[in-house]
Length: 509
Image 1 (cartoon, rainbow, N blue to C red):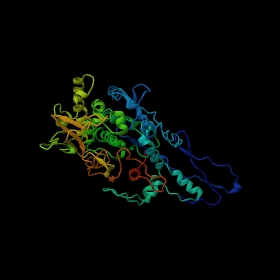
Image 2: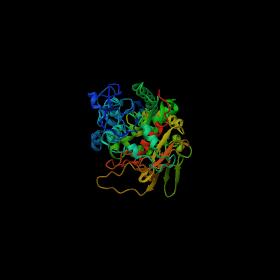
Image 3: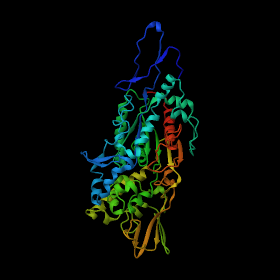
Image 4: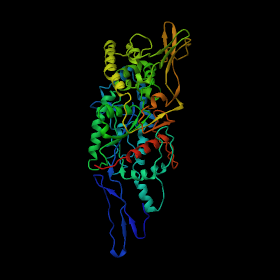
């Protein structure tokens, strides 16, 4: 922008109820020779839609205000209420057929964007788990809606640089598609507005069902900005399992035409053995407090939930990721088919699902579980394999600091001795014909959940691929925002990817 001349007044834009910019001109006498400058601001919109990961969307009971899953409080203190619930209560509450998305979660600075866009709550921010996404969503929106800084510089004669300008020329170290932003690309990005929307979905249900809802949501978002769109498409930014929802919509539901591009963060591209470990041993931390800290509490929930089951390793993950080791015997499973050898296996002790832990009528529940695997899980995993949007950008965890389950080992160990107050039959142990096996992780590089080989997308047409030092849940952590360019590399990569996509828009609708 040009510098302000003498007797020139710069007028800040205001916005009407339709998000259109206008300028209120001052009253002045002709002899004052006052020059009024109205800086041209972006008017055309490119919507950005964020998709959370598993457990990343708030849930409530269908047709009710009763909250089922929320984490609005500091460090997810809301989850403490789950510690007293029985396994029967968990199964009933976390039932995909009895729950729906709750849009009323905490939203950071709901009206901060003024009348440029609908409020953040109206854009779905309340559907996202605040503990995981509250601050990252706010920072992402601020970076994509910071044209006011350029106007401030014009009025005040300052040279404060925006997050986008600070990225000009910076090498992020992407292993593929490393291409620093140019000044021209950043300048052009200020021709557009980027309202961030959030698509919360019922993560207990099949990701195919969520993709069907995503289709309706994207069409609704595009309709919101009818007449203001730079292109009749959205940009998707995904976290973890949200990437599977986006890909299924894009590639298996003919949704590609509605998508300008996709940024995937720590997506379990090929599934992860962590899904098996959870089923057999329960989950850790806050997540475990909710869905179950041991197999008895967690298995009844996961067995009825297609979404989490669709995170299991498919055939493309490779064979032999489940190892059974003793002094006299070593087996690697699966040998050819994880579905028949592990997930649908009813007799071998290393099988995924324990029929006697399913509660209610276990015979009926087992048959329902098998039908779920055959009709929802296998088809979804195998049909999605190798399919990606043509404009895909992705970062994945590749750190030794966050040990991940590249493979799992049932290792024979001496029977553990009783410890005061600690039960012998801990969830990591399995007693078989007088032998005791302990389930351990390979502890390879990754993000703590998705191992390197599942997160590193092998798609030859990928636009950019970055290995990052991130943990799974906090993949979009913002970094140190107190320094001039203190954003995390994941946030920088996401911002850069969005600007690269916008630079390819050639015409307005």
